[in-house]
Image (cartoon, rainbow, N blue to C red; front, side):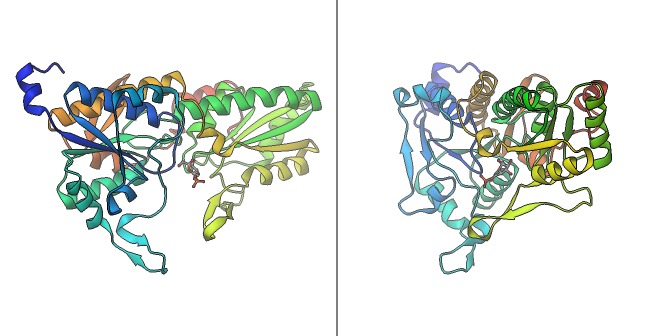
Length: 368
Ligand code: F6P
């Protein structure tokens, strides 16, 4: 959007805040860079809220000032310089004494104490829903930007961090092929993605996996073993299986492990499959759990592009006075949608979509 000198002068002196919330991923810093750059072209100041909404909850509020020269190097930097958390819903915040308290008003007060004109929140569906609720209760100006390696935010075809995670998972499969072939083994790669199988399906096809299992599709161990044996009979003694972390056992039980602080985490389906495949085929199996490698490191060029486009578009929404909206990627362009629409649905894999069809057409076993 082109602004006249007069419009720019009127808009001047606005202060906008930006925060990152939920699990980190590659590309968050690239968004911050884009927002600071574009906001400064409107003559606005941007401040970064530290530790997601916790920065607005603290007194004094915890934030950092941005200067253009400070954000230059952020394009390629992984993680988030603002810090983030995927714990502590402010509407039911766990207190040190074990009680739970609604601390929403403290966050809203923090927004006004900092003299913000608008807040840009970068988050997945859970964080965006919380920020939307806070903005509604506090009557403040909010714009959302979707990020998550799971790529499951509704209405947007892409979220920041997904492409980088797919690249990392694909590279892992590429590497596994060689060692699997050298030892005639079945290699199982367990990837993240929570209840959506996007990472597994994308990376599995791109990496030439032979079996791909995702939470959206049921499977039978017998079918998987059949596929592996078919390959063995053709002289192809190794196979690659990619499985999404939320895939259940054949009997439909979810596999979780209890880790620190009594939290249940997804994980372990790879080892379960390895045991079953060895039982069913006699093949030697090994499991690789890719874990947080998928979230770390340098963002891919595509995530940098998307982050730059989303950051600029979010600032333009503020300039146009369009709030309670989320920027989204649809049909190869950035659009904006009401936050309500984005958080209403959860975007899982279309089991009859292009990728699923391509996988079947390539002879990849999707479990049944
Ligand atoms: O939602 C992103 C994600 O990376 C999931 O794919 C994964 O299940 C989860 O976060 C891991 O969270 P944590 O960082 O708490 O281990």
